[in-house]
Length: 276
Image (cartoon, rainbow, N blue to C red):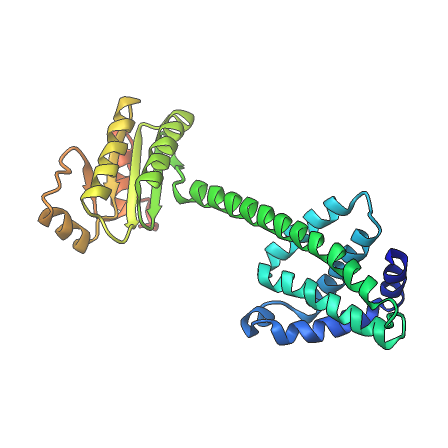
């Protein structure tokens, strides 16, 4: 039966893929189809059928091909339900086409149904496992990348660095901020660190506590910390909450903070004639 199915798929691949795409477009969410080009959809559909054929061949590189296919469809944003439904749909199309071509008849239909279950069920499990593993890996890598980007320490002048903060600061991110601050201060030999909170939407007691912790950590390694980007509404919130930021030098803008940081490192901005 393996060879019978394999030969039929090889001979009718183009037609099977076309029928499969027509069926799946009816199953897919319109938003999903809008973000994927027809060319990519056709190419990936052929890759899917080739994967099925590879499984039929008991190919030695099936696991590798399955992993690569799973990584690809995760990147494309194909939902897992779309893929598993696609496998069942392909099996039904294959059965109908083989029946229409008199390859499956009354005398061997039961044999094919049994074969169908023994073939597609394990493959379905393998696809689910590969998709899940690829999805978890992708999410993990994205989370790591976002964390690294969410608290960068940027050298702007010799001995002066800036950490622009954007978004909500929770306990996990605060830990990352302190870690990046300490590593960056040592790496860049910074004497002054400016923490820019322009992009932080809310500064409550917890956020202020995390910022104070970061400043204390910076002082322990011999650098000074400055808080900049304090908007009027943030300043009012800090006052209303009774948060004590007296240990900080503070400024409303990053520019003013950099000017003071230059003074603290015995430098200043000099405006030349014609460049004010």
